[in-house]
Every structure is written in structure tokens, then in C-alpha cells.
Length: 413
Image (cartoon, rainbow, N blue to C red):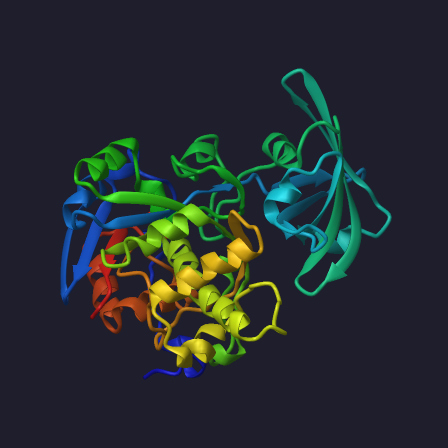
């Protein structure tokens, strides 16, 4: 078995010409090409026909996070522009939703473009005319942290939430590899049709292809659907710079899953459970390991820490060999003991070759960057066949990355 810590990212690369990166989405969401991989064979179709390749009674899990307008541009009195990219809430808030609902002011961990020109004590300000109000927003530099800055945002009218402030004052943060300015159409197209909970700085892009018509087709075939929430952070684009994965720090992301959804997953574990996007997959597999952790807490009365999944926990806990039913049932018991209707926590789970999948049988996903943790996840699911899949896509004019085409990949048995 592959030891994920010893993996060299150099072994997971391919040549991606710049012209193959989709700069814009197609006019119709479900017109994108679809590559289907299973049992060693590859074929292609269009997303509008995806239902034909999913067995009846399967369960599809979608990530219903919503991309927020996380890019804020401030002009200094001297005329220079400073860009503030809102990464995630300050640690003082228990979760993203709570932070997004803050009124009047909030602390946020941010990336700052032009940080060297922003001196402590200089308050950045901007005013925006929005509907009947004039919105006034100021940003103050609080402290520099490893990899980010803590910034205090203060605004009026104070009756608006921070999510509303971002909506009025910010811009959608397209990924760094889409080398063009954000356009009005991106507000709709860089968002799934089922996006609901504010919190992501990047879209769960596999879901961008789904339309109300596809959801209707799924229902007609008795294919079930459900939703989890994973708020995608900028770390999803974080390059792997270390020689081996042992020295790469995986980004942590917030997940939010209801008891009803966990019960729905348990009742369908004997069916084909398909994750729509790597974020949905990461959430589903994290639920299993959080269940294992809750089982361990049950046995050790002194161990009552909050459930939060670290980068390598899955590989260290694999010795326990707990079934998916037992793990998820234990997680539900833990939630009941703690009087929780929703599980809100962070996962840092790194899925790479050597990982054994516990819940997911299939993955719907776009084509990912060379030498990325997302490509490692694909390789964990289908093994070395990832090379065949990507070679086929390159040879047959598939469009790559966030606004590109996608694939339906079935786990190698």
C-alpha cells in the first residue's frame, strides 16, 4: 500500500497548455462535455445526459455552499489601491455562518495585496451607493499572522450583516488561473443553482454543470439527492511545494452537516453514493472518521474534546476497522449527547493514494491542476488510471479547471 506521507507530488503532474484552461463557462451549464470512467473504460457524452450513467437508487451528495464576494478594493488617500481578500473568520467566531451574520463590525483573516504600503494605524475607507442606502466600510490592520493578516471591518448602516456588506462592496474571487477581470456574468455562473449558505471563496465547480432539468431527470430515475456544506477556502489552490506530502500542510475547511443527512447516508450505504465534487467527497469521508473519533470518545470518558479532523488522522485511525454504519451511527449518538442538530466543525483530511474510501463509490468532478492535492484525491479513487483519464481529456479537446468540462469517475474495486 502507498504511504501517503512518502508521495512525491512530482509523480502527479501532466502538461496543461494555457489554451486548455477555460476562461469562460459555456452558454449552457449542462452543455459541457462529460468523461465517464469505470472498470478501466473511458467514454464521453454531455452533462445533460449524466443521469444515464448513474444507477437507479443511487444517492448524489452536493455541496450547497455559496461563494461570497470576498475581494475588496480600497483606494488610499495617496491614490494607491490595496486589495483585501477575505480568507476566513477570525478564531473568535465559532463558525463561518456566525461570522457572516455579524452586524456593525467583524474581524477577518485576509490576504492583502499591497500590504507593504498599508501601515498600522492607516484606516482604509470606501463608500458604496446601494439601493436606498449609502454604505460606508472601513478596514483597519490589526496584526500580521503566518500567511495572513487580521483585519477589522467596520460599516454602516450597522443593521446589515457582513455577508450583505460583501455582496454590495466586494467582487467574486475567480481562481488565479483564470487570467481575466471579473465580469457581471460571473456573479451567476461562478455559483451553483443550489448555492445556499454564504462562506466559500471558491466555487464547488463540479456542481456548476447541474441544472433544474438534470435534477428533474435524477428524480424521474429515482436517484436520490442530498446536501452537505463545505465552505471552500483559498487553500484549495495552495500549491504543493514540499518534496513529499509529509511536509505539506493541508488546508482546513469548515463543514456543516445535518443529522437528517447523516441518517440519509446510513440508510443508503448499500447503494452507490456519489459525491458531486471533491468538496462533497472530502466532507463525506470526513464524517466517517469523525464517527470513529466519536466512538473512541465513547470508550474513553476522559476524552471529551470537540470533534475536528486532522490531516493524517484517517491513516492513524484506520487500525480500528469500524464499519461505515457503526461510525456514522456513533456520530449521531455523539450529536444527540451534545444536543446538536447539525455538525459544524473543521476538516483537514488529505485524501491521497493509499487512502481507503469508506463511503463514496463515485465522484463527479472537473479536471484539476497538475501537482495539486485535488489530483491526488482523484488518483486515490481510480489509481494510475488518472493518467489515462487526463490523457484522453487532453487528446479530445476537453476544457480544464473551474469553468471547464468534467467527469464521472467510479472507484476502482
